[in-house]
Length: 485
Image (cartoon, rainbow, N blue to C red; front, side, top):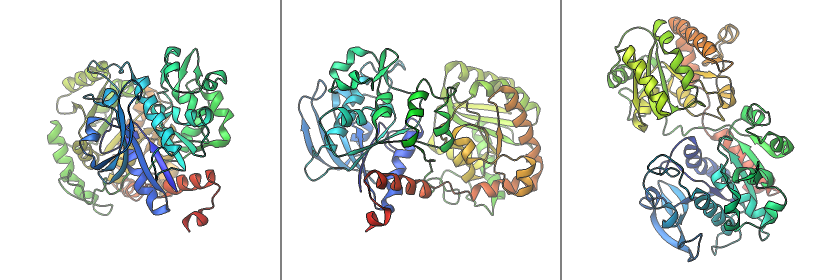
């Protein structure tokens, strides 16, 4: 099967969050299943500079107010088609934000152009290449199914994956005339969203299949609490909505072979984590004393529950814990966490920003990985925690609920617990979860068993990749054994 993945970011070339990890890992995970996946990405400087053996496969002299072309090539082992449109993508820094931290004013145009290029590829724009399925990711590629549904007919099937429903690509009606989208999309209400237009809504309404990144999140977004105004639409499309859990790249995240760690280890040698713990505490300026080291690697936002964490820091320290934070986001939350570090020198520390290498060390050296999100479509941080024996402490939402088994008495006695799960997402519940975690940490044998059990969890892409391959086969009317032949 030929599948074109359409995404605004892809690891390791350009990354702002978990979307890039998924789009970077999926092609390799699908290859053994007979799925040939290329990825269409914008021609950001970080992508163009790493593209190898690039060849021009299409020229587009009048393309969304500028000159563009499609380049085919490889980078970091990935087969790419790059939309080289300097007037849209040749900009420094974030793929979405200008130097002041605001959305680029022409984001509507930048990602309509990406979606339209996918549509043209689906129509056979490039000789010798015609994907059977266009797999669009998030609002930035949300118009892909709309172009296929409303513009000139094409046989290509469409899949839209929602990584986070909170981001919907909402713009004013004034841009509609420049989208190259047939007016039927407006007449039939596919793109209209509370008086504006929404790229994500358009895709959700007409894609042949919808997926999101965990089974629980697929259920949650059909409710008023998590549906972000789209719950009615998603309820009406329940028959084509699938929750497929994300995996992680277990080659890149392997505590037995990770150059970021001071000491490699496996599930049978978790005592070696002590060297990583010491290196981590030194890096953050935290005293190496008894008591669990709690950690956070996250965007510092309300969604991630970081305001609740701020309110719990004093209690965490009073219970004997220490806290290291790696992340950035809301300036008020950054300031509050810096304040907590000042109140508790040697006990609490924050490094503002992100480092891939340091994030590995946090997973390999901390005792607890905190993910107290108010909503979490899947979450990857807790999967890394399981893989590295950094016991997850998570809220019972989305993919967190699907991947971590709470250490209640029954689960501990049955030998299945892998972390601490709390609900509801409140400061009081989080504080109680921290207290429970400290108690569990004090039960050394129980703690070691939880670590080892988590490290043996299947967090790879293997099972999920098979579900995507089956979905593609169903859309094309194939049986898996027929496709493999």
